[in-house]
Length: 282
Image 1 (tube, rainbow, N blue to C red):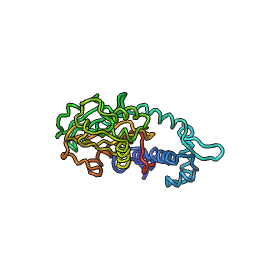
Image 2: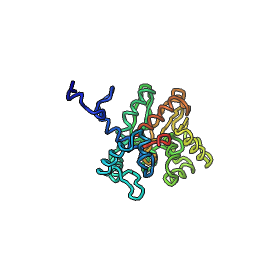
Image 3: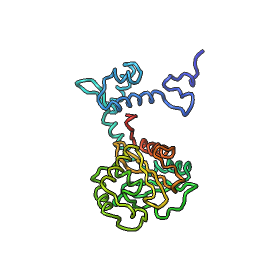
Image 4: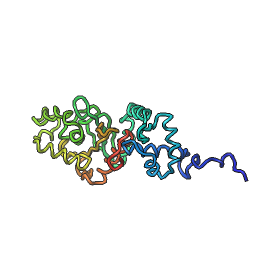
């Protein structure tokens, strides 16, 4: 019996058993492109085929089409394949269109709903770590001192410590020197009680880099604790941080706690939207 028009599709065009309809050949093509991306160098055809678990002729058909549109280019001397000029233009366009605020907002709302506490989005502004968005949880206590536009200290805020650990030292040096000379105001009562040494600064950097998340207790505000996780771009540079804050004892701020791991994973989810991959995914 002849197949109907609806059932005569090739395997590459059939919808998956579950989920939304897709075109399998496109997904296979992007598997090939991802192998080339992860290789980080022009790659032989057979190596690409082996990595994709496809035949060499099948992969070659895809590469010919990708070459025609500029997604892939072949080296004249070795015959190896690398990403082409259109792939570069796509990447640059994605960078220009990525908006950390729009990407972070629903994820921050999820964190606030799960934990019940306040979540901040902060970026590095002209004067240092700056809050640009805030979501309240069901258990949040009013934090009138910390509103959108507030500039936080580098050493005595979890957000600031994240930038301290991840930004180039040239970017943070001026603010760091000012804070180490002594507090310039009594705006944050708890901050004024501590003077940081160079050894303190290096210890902060090491702890954040080790755990990939920062913590600050009783420093920014008395009786409050905060955890902050970095958001990276596709080049691995920290562009923002999401910070969870609440009363000491109400939040489990152990760096290995479920709360800390939740915040870290959600920050990584935002980073992945910007094209970032950690070392385990390269």
